[in-house]
Length: 299
Image (cartoon, rainbow, N blue to C red):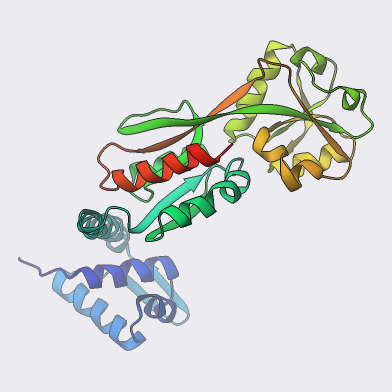
């Protein structure tokens, strides 16, 4: 049986699956609720299978509906890629570019680079997200993201990478801590200190542990933070010391009350910040332009 599938009907179905409400799905698709409902009814009739269970104040998908929605998402993504590819051929430095950054990079890097990106690439629309490494890489593989800014190295199956800059670590201590009197510190100075780190899932945690392991320093087990700003506040409260990436210790972030930040003597421990994208991307020209500007203006 030949079925004439329409892309807009698949978009309606995905919207209902995500909103679980016909009215909100219709609003998202910029159509009336009766129009959306009627089109989905026609889709069910043409496929010969029920996709949606309709009940007052309750919309759920059937088993067939769940399976078809998963495939509809892939079809929609492929269709969007066709449109983006054509747009990129017409003007490779225009259109949207979906960029995800680690939470330990984004808030500190973006204020330094966004003005230069907007000035140099005025037709490029950046869609910015914060994600940890694992979901970021998954988003790249799934075609949900175009570019990731994260700490290298990472697994690159099907992906390409470029190092953008190297970011030294600094040490944050309470303002009256003995190490606050030093102009610079050594990793060996951390021995005997209570080290505060991020929770599991943050690659910065693993990098900090690697740095401290060389000096025989162990993590304080009773507390793990969800963000660098939480770590900073715990240091200010005298709960311990922590490692901060240099960008997170500059400007307003470097003037946090109750915290003193000191550099490490050279060669200081560093993390490698890089860009990652799909080998098959149609947005290579835009990615090259954005990453070049980040590398130029990050430090």
